[in-house]
Length: 202
Length: 376
Image 1: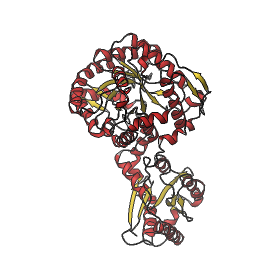
Image 2 (image 1 turned 30 degrees about the vertical axis):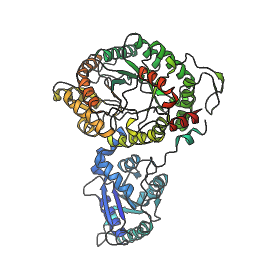
Image 3 (image 1 turned 90 degrees about the horizontal axis):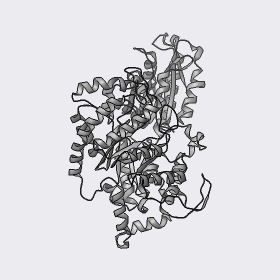
């Protein structure tokens, strides 16, 4: 088996970003469970923000966004991390998934994670972010990781609870990514019904 | 090679002065633009069909009939006629009537329409868009080729012993293009019938359409209509020109920035880099348009969008004067490289001549007769 590729999406808007930090730790935990040579591709949506809005308006992605979309779609697994805004994923995070073609993430193993000021909104992962990926027909791993500001305060950079959750979620994602067949490239032209069948004998 | 213009018929406020034309002014402007198209030597004028503001052309054959009476050579077409929500019987009648009045200077481009509410307004279900396009066109195809039609389908009242009148001029129906921006099924449909395929690639990157057109060409050959290179392809285009490139960019930018479809999105520079839009000197328009052939192969019809986004009539007419200088160069260049066995743009005269040739059974290929049999 060739080493899998993991795509990492961070929707953090500040720089430096704790969302990006969490995304990096999740990627590390996942890659640590996979063969050496596992490719980790990190996509910071902030860099693509204008392209994402433009794609919403024009209906097609500019080259940089198209490349990012192709990396996400062709990856063996996805780590998707957003800061919580107004009790849910931020608009940039949702907009990225809004510009994907229907079915682009079907069957894709996904680890969902979020950052927020306090743990008060941690269930947004379960009531907002997991349903989004259910809609996209992705396979989310059972452990979703939430990091509140205070979680970063403990000795060693992360609190014990957060580190454990990161490791567990990474292991869950690695297990799915490792055994998954590489995603078939969807080809709308390969599956066109011949016209006599479209006509149904009309 | 045929060159022309197509109009969406949008009533859009001119962003440079806040002026919005009335519907009456816009309708008359479209007629003026069509007549100008003939004056500058273009081959085709095509109008859109819409059933909601801010668009005026709800009744294309009425407008095209009027233009037919005021022009001599121009081919009158549509971009697009809604095959999903119009009654195919009415399309057969309207366009045959127009064909007679215009002495054959008529073809049409079929599309599904992209405005959701139009479907329920006309009693149709948007979820069945492809099925409607398939069934309705098959009926239209038969109404123009069979004098008496017995028909029963899913979406329309059955017909028993129905004859669509008037019969097509010289027994040759108007040429049909199928327009699509992303549905392989529509390319498949165009290929099956040996009809034209129009890729309006002006708002999207070229690579996407290369695949679509190539698919159409392969399927055209599969169904026995000729080689892939002989398939009938039309392309869109969108240009704004001034003698000096910088003047074109400066003048067009406010229209671009506020345009329906792509306004308030990418910059003019990004969009011209990513799509076929050309804003610059006539030479730049020539250079970019010539690249279309490199991507799509030899093709038969090039239509430009010239009159949208609130551009005033006066400016559009100036643009057409410039286009009148550009087109002869494009025509010369593209005609010079097109192989002899690749057909020219479809005209009524050529199709009448071909139908006479086809009537000789020795000329009909095996695949062709098989297809004819399957259509009956």
